[in-house]
Structure formats: C-alpha cells, structure tokens
Length: 127
Image (cartoon, rainbow, N blue to C red):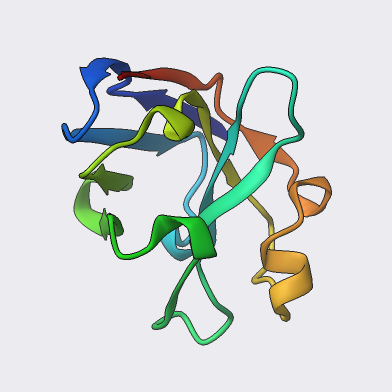
C-alpha cells in the first residue's frame, strides 16, 4: 500500500487548504484512511477518521468544526478540507491506513495502530 499526501503549503491565519491522500498498491476501503498531524516538538496526534461503522466521521476536539474529511472512492482518494486555519494548526499532516477497521475510538485515534503512512505534507499557518 502506498499513500501519497499532498496539498500542504503556507497560508495566512483564517485561510483554507485542502489536503489529499491518494492510495495505491492494493484495493481497500478508503474508510480505513485516517488523518494525523505532528507539530514541531510534539507527538503525532489524531485529526480525523471514519469509525468502525464506516459511516460516522470522528474529529479531534481541536477541529471545532473547521475541518471536513471526505473521500472519492472512484479515485481511491481521501481529502481533508481545512478552513479558518490558526497558527496552532501548523504541522506536518499525515494520512495513514490499517489493514482492518479500527473497532474502537482508542484504536482509531492511536497512531501506533497504523501500518501504512504517507510521507506527510507540511501546513504552515502564519499569524
């Protein structure tokens, strides 16, 4: 499995960006792709993903309604639409995937539970 993240860049506070994560190498559900981020000097943290039902999107509390993740199964691509960006959102954003559905919130949000990782895309938000 290969995950290719793209779409990062430099944006002013209050701006928007759309990240993409294209999956290739095998056929699997894009619902198993989850977004994480890692800010300088901080641990990697969960951003957004789909729960085990395949229908409910789970977001980290800090998203506060500003981010939306959606997928295009025909393109095997998952997107993270971000708006109202804040300097605190500055981080490398990663997409990750598992071989199986995460059956709990604890698994869904734990980066150690993921096998496949994209290379990350840097988002820098200036104040």
